[in-house]
Length: 388
Ligand SMILES: *Cc1c(COP(=O)(O)O)cnc(C)c1O
Image (cartoon, rainbow, N blue to C red; front, side, top):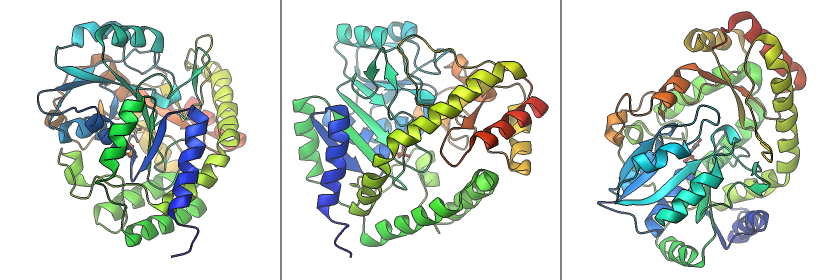
């Protein structure tokens, strides 16, 4: 094993993140969901407890709650932000609620002011789900600094990638202490797992371009379904079971990638803003609604959401024509294959989220998409998409 992949690398990476968020503690994991699971466990959440979550998320979020034998309470979203609707918090609350997870979907900030005020009054800790956001601001304050803790994913499709990976940023001494104790029991991934992932990362960096996006995603899912790749989720996990080797730290190899990718974040975010500004300016000309932002919101869009009436056909056509259009979230607990009732979600629980899931597509902002390709994507929309 080359000497560059050692625990100093992980320390350097964690310190970079710690400085960025001026946090009390930063801890790194094999995946983002493990960072969340650790935070919930460190908050002593268990049987009989409940956690409030927006009903428009990745299924691995309620799965982390379920793994601790606690219950998820799904709160509907606000149609402007695609994030938890502060006006519904009181109605959804139950006396056994022990945490509130606040996600910033697509990088768009949730309405932190009323959410924070409500949580303070109820004395409920906030955990921010920043898997879509690394460098967005709400009223001038960096997302990831509003709660007791925030977690991040560095999986392929996220603000910056280490292949797979998760980061937990902690803002209280007490919680940092509990997380440190939990970490003493947890393993690093095997060298083989880490090396396989590193190989995948190299292939990903060299192969996935907009024109091959749909094909690459299909291949990736097929190969990982058959156990030939390290995929994001096993099928059983999507059905509500916790995999055996779930609770793992980040490998030093992932941290090594992270240390490098993190240094490029500012430039990557500038590119994201440039493309988002372009979409925002041009979409109305084609009859689509841009995302209305508020004063003080500075958004590093991970993907740019657009509402359409013919989502299913449009995605099929985009794949055929080699145009990169994304589809998360396809249902309140993404991806579509999950059995939502296994997580306590029932059809109709979050009608605004369900409507968004059936209508919202998203446009890429990452740095493998140039302004010219973004233009091509808009041309495709103007031709084939029906504005909602
Ligand atoms: C990707 C994602 C996660 C989980 O991240 P993993 O690293 O795949 O575990 C959680 N929440 C949201 C909103 C995500 O997009």
